[in-house]
Image (cartoon, rainbow, N blue to C red; front, side):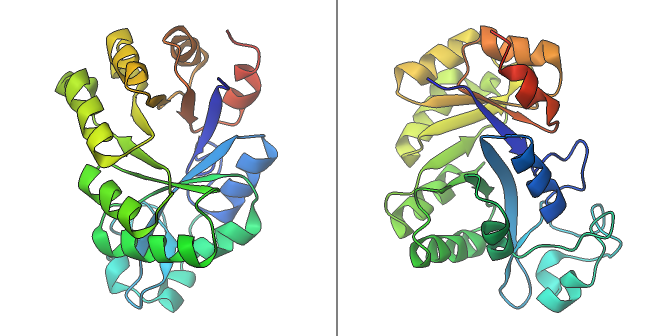
Length: 230
C-alpha cells in the first residue's frame, strides 16, 4: 500500500496555516493529501480556520461564529493572506483533501457541498467526534471518513471499535503515542492508520517501522525524505 504524506493545514511549519499560500505550497511539494479545518462564519460561509477564535492565527479577535464572511476576509491570516472560503480551496488546488469538522452545523454544510459538487471521491472528512463522522456518512453517502483519536492509551480496541462503529475508513493518532499493537489492531479491522505530528526524520522512520499507511506533517521536506525512507 502507498505511504501517504498529508500536509497539515497546508504546510504550517513554513507557511501561515490554513491559507491558500500554505495549500499551494503543499501541492507544489508533492503532498498526497492536504489536511485542513472548516468552520461556519456568522452568515453561514464555510471557511478554513482551525481555532474557534481568530486571535491566534490572524490580526483580529473574536469567535469565528460571531464574525461575518466579510469581517473574516478583512483579517490578515499571515503574510498578507486572507481567510479562505472552502470553495476557494477546492478551486485553487487539485490535491485530495482531508477536511476536519468539529460541530454538526459545519458538518452538515460540508456534506451538502460534497453532494452538490460531487466531491466524495476527492474529499474525506475527519473529526475527533465519531458520532459526527457517522452523521456525515449518513448525509453524504459514499464519503470516506477518518477518526482522529487523542491517544491509543484509551485502548487500541476501543479506538478501533469507535472507528468501525462510525464507518470510518481510517484512524489518525499521535505518532509519539502509537504502539505496534494499536496499528496491528487497526489493520486487522481493515482500517488505515496515519501518524499525526510526523515532523522529524526520526519520527518518519518510526512511522515506517510501525508500518503506518501515512504521516500527517507540518513540513514539506518530510514528503521528499519519505520517498527514500524505508
